[in-house]
Image (cartoon, rainbow, N blue to C red):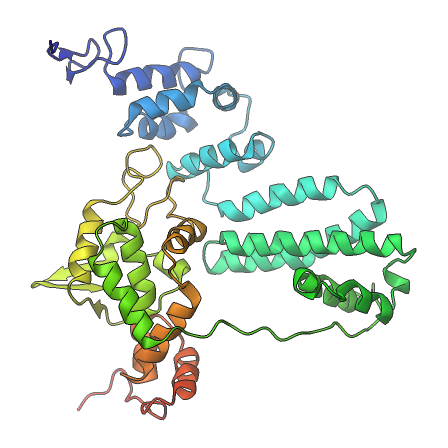
Length: 418
């Protein structure tokens, strides 16, 4: 027997009551108001935008469960105290880091904290803990200098141009770990940087070049900083995987466009890679505003001008717009990202998309290479560069390698008038 819906005692909305006469949104608001109480029965003004944004999430039950986690409850109580500054530095002292990152994203999303690059912040936190764990004070000093003036400086330059990616911070962590490992290895040989010789460098790389080639950055930095005598850093050439054949690329595209068993998000992302040679980092910066639908023609703003989309991909992309994931939590309910992530105001991460494509055996790098080689055979490299968001140098180089008939094409100026 079905019991008819009841009205919420607080807001009067008809529907299933979550608890004690309250609907889900009102129960969430009550719990949030209680945890953010500043001790005077009110919420400190700085947190009001967070309160208003979080309490309207589509799935209030998930929000209630999140607030009830002991460490989350403690973090919110700390921020509710008027004596606690609401700053990035305050959050840096909290743990566990995943929950802190989630809360930080929410606070930035609602304007409580100024925007900051989340991956850069996570790396800085990791670096602080890693440096603290180095027992040798001389080693700690050298690694601190290297990490600050080389690794962190490079990441900050990346952040100035756009969001830092998981891969960039992952690479930075490996460089720091390799530097620490190298200094420890030298000590085991009764050596330090000033008396390190070429034989030591060669021995370090012998038989483990691939695993240890990320030490290059540290060694070159140490030589520039005159902490290490000038020596030769071994180099073994690495090559990118060969592009898949045009026949293979078209077969995978047909499979993506017709197989309804593959998740829609995966089909759209993989098609953008294989059809337009788009890197995952660029795909993830696309918004729903980049999709144009005019007079029956769907186009996507990858560059200038927008790129017309053929069927059935156009229909597939429009379906994806109506079925985007990660829109039911407090983090992204009003997100305009084409691929919303689970973090507040952020798109999905490249790693998350990459895992999806790997699960379906989509060759990302070789597929992109194949797509670009085919495209430069069909149109002038400078035209493709503008339309797909590449540089002229990139497309011209690929055109030359592919033997494109357009490789010597010199376009007329963009603003040429008859």
